[in-house]
Amino acid sequence: MAANQHDVYKFDGFRLDTINLALYHSGVLVDNGGKKALQILAVLLRKNERVVSHQQLIDEVWGTDAFGVRPDHVNHYVSKLRGILSAHGPGEASIESVKGRGYVFHGEVVGTDYLRSSDAMVVPEFALAEDNKTAVESEEIENVVASTPPAGSISRYLVVAALASTAVLAAVLFAAYWTGYWSNDDEMIRQVVKDSQLFESLVLYRNPTAFNEADMNKYWTAESDINSNEDRRRIKDSIKKLVAEGRHYGPETKCEIFEFQSVELNGQRDFATVRTLEKWFIADYGNDGLLLKNKYVGPYFVSYVLRKTDGRWLIERSTTARTTRPVPTLAEIIPVDAATANSQFLVRVMGQDFESETVFLELTGPGCPESRPCKVANSILREHARITAGELLNVPLTLAAGEFRVVVRNGDSHPSNPLGLSVR
Image (tube, rainbow, N blue to C red; front, side, top):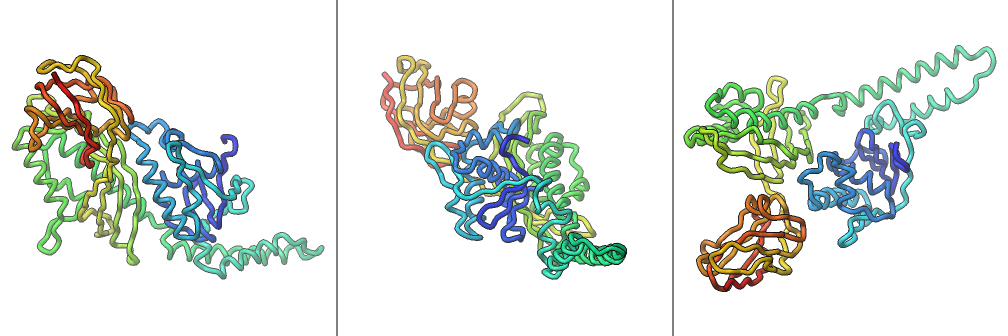
């Protein structure tokens, strides 16, 4: 275990279990905000009162899976944490943003390890919290076991302790059963959601001509007169389009981010809503084997609706909502070569908040009308330029003579502030 790294952290009435990634307040399990949010919280608690940069959080939480993870991902999870903490007290102010540096957690934090912690229980705390009587009985057992019985009475005390222990265990198991703690519904839901998306993109779209609708019954609800499955219709339409246009997804296609934000079940445990954060890399090929295009899709949020049918969780529909992309800022455009008309030259674009996977340029001027501006696509930038959050170096341009207005966008974000560029 790393220095100062503990299994359990306590602060402001909260308890964070870093082994099971569970957050409690006053002994009751609260919305955990997702695995990544609690891992970020653990790092902030471990480095209490010290500034932790975005990159430090990315390195510690995502590790070797950090490709494509940006500071705005961290900001998203910190925002979730603030909402969770503030819902149970003045916890929102505990996480301070330090402009240009990162975040710092303020508060009294106590860290313990499971081997030393009184919270290291065999059963989860929220199961015990379902029944106050259980907690009282548990305390009575501790008193019985801790006391030293008089000589000749050991057997009687052991019997009493054993009976009391059995009663407590039965109460705990009963509470656990009714709270659904032992139910595997949550695990089944997560599995079918993730597997369905991998099946759709990495199986169906890679070989659309081999599509068999019966294969979809493993993940999606069936069509009927009263139950129209929107996802099945969308997928079938996508496959028809791929076949008609002679296209398919290539082997480079992959899922880069798939994180569960929430899984919620109704009281009858036969209906569930799920929210994920997803990002994909898609390589689009023609049937002649030529690469047509590749692109990143996302990150975006997806909301799923699932129903339990004959003991199986199946997807009924899903909706996609894009994350809010940061609006980039332009500071300066510097020609690296002479900006000569009708000849390619290179420029250096300085600014802030450039997203390497989505940033692109739009230019208006001679030959580039506002109704149809000239673009330097992200694929061109990634191939020919060097991209950082604050610089686009060696951007290739070929323009007519005149004055141009240049803006930068991150995907579907609003445009940056405009800057001028003269070409002679």
